[in-house]
Length: 391
Ligand SMILES: Cc1ncc(COP(=O)(O)O)c(C=O)c1O
Image (cartoon, rainbow, N blue to C red; front, side, top):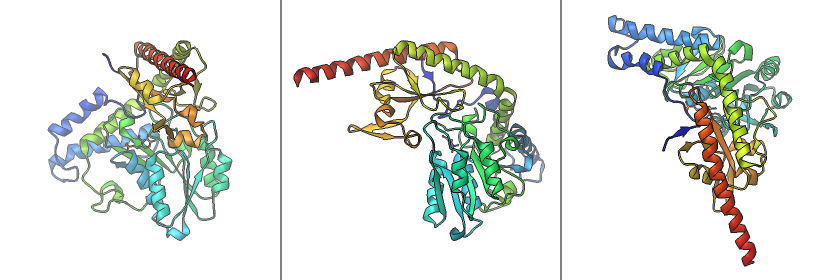
């Protein structure tokens, strides 16, 4: 049985050129990048190159990049880094209701410490409305954080408009771009953001590495104190190999994202059309009224439970949007935020494509899913007929 991986929003494989760039720094060039002797030189230069590759991808300056252990740490540094510069009684934070836990949880932690917190509603199309942001800003709001693209339904948020509103009121804007980089154009000046999160393992670099873009002049309180690494914002000897890998991944993204994105969109739309044919009923797509990531398809399969469907779809790796326990449906934060009916959300499956997804995989995924749906839907129908007979 072959495996078809359609869960690229969860993580991506490490690209071959990324592994090749990293290997010498795992095997040979072990020097501490801070060492002034000759063994420190190559690692130091390699990290400088990685920083400039990341900055080039974002059209930022090299000294605006802070390396981190991944998207979660970058989000924590953005939120806590800004808020910790103010006393809790004098600082308010605004985030959207469907942020990733890597934003929701630090925000709730800050709220427990006494900071003000407002959760912005998301409309049924999966968008944060700029006027809601304007309405949520208070005189002591220090930071707004709205994700660039949602990880589950892929809707792309109006970050430029939100940035303009924030700046009119002297408020900083952070965006979590973990899901948009590699699929969309992500350039900090075009978006107008002050802080932006990068997660390596969503762009074909390893897990456990990422970065925070910090616009020149934005002051942050460090979370990890120690020596003066990363301009004093994050102490700890650099993980040279992983940073080199992240740099190479950023170089690939900058060179290839545009061409890759249009192919992803074609494949995704082909998948939807094949599946609709197989199911023979209208399939609703979450977020379809909004601009969406080209690789993401959040579908509501009628009459089945998403987990059962994926369990029956042999060899297909994808995600669901709701957990069902003892007849109760617990919706994901995103599906709850867009107000999806729990009965519909039971059948939600997220299919997310990657740069190496092929047409053969799309055809096979549609075949396997279609077959699994037929099986489950007909057994559910039989069970309800029997119940009707018994009753
Ligand atoms: C939108 C978003 N933000 C943040 C993260 C966390 O990134 P990391 O796994 O690198 O900590 C993820 C990963 O799932 C994500 O999808």
